[in-house]
Length: 78
Image 1: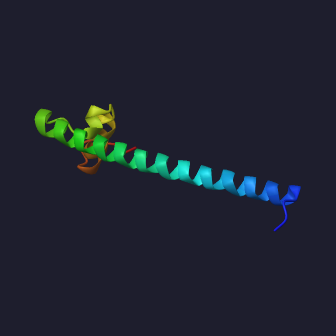
Image 2: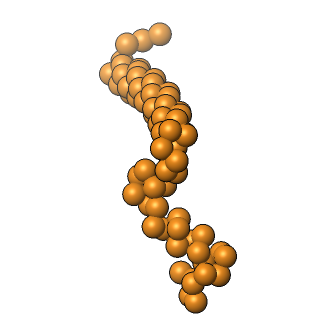
């Protein structure tokens, strides 16, 4: 195998790709773990306070409006 500039450039590019893919795997693993932890904390908080996850993050009015629409307590639906 020769060490031409084209070969060297190809190996450098391939190494950069491999490093990038490894970083993406680590980030996705971290994001998945953080999401699982957030769901567990939300469920525990819901059990302790009785306030659902949507209410905890400020979307309670939207959920309540949808429930009212589905049960036809409102004359209009959004």
